[in-house]
Structure formats: C-alpha cells, structure tokens
Image (cartoon, rainbow, N blue to C red; front, side, top):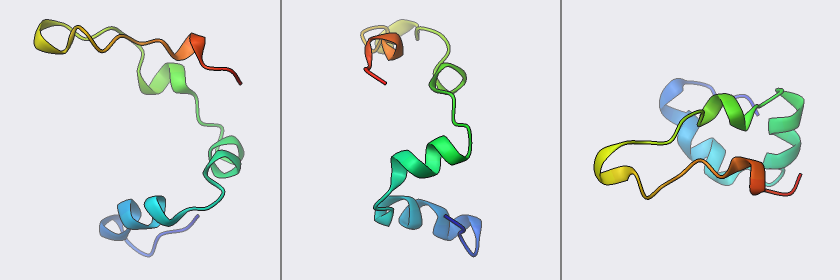
Length: 54
C-alpha cells in the first residue's frame, strides 16, 4: 500500500482489502504498537495482544 500523501494514508488504509498481507510484508509488530497497559480512565483497555491467534 503506497499512499500519495500522509493525508491520504487513513482513507487508503480503510480501503485496503489485504491488510493482513500488507502488515506482514512491512513486518508490523503488535507488541511495539501497544506495548504497555494504559493508566487512569483507559486502564480498562489492556494489552491482550498475546491472546490474539496468529
């Protein structure tokens, strides 16, 4: 997926039909994306990425 500009990236991502392959190709790592549990009012949104089947 190659966006023409940063402003088009979000809409291009939403239109992507092969997102899993794009993420794999670009070596996306969920552990780096969400690497700690949030604090305060967002504490209920834990990092359960290890529970996702790969």
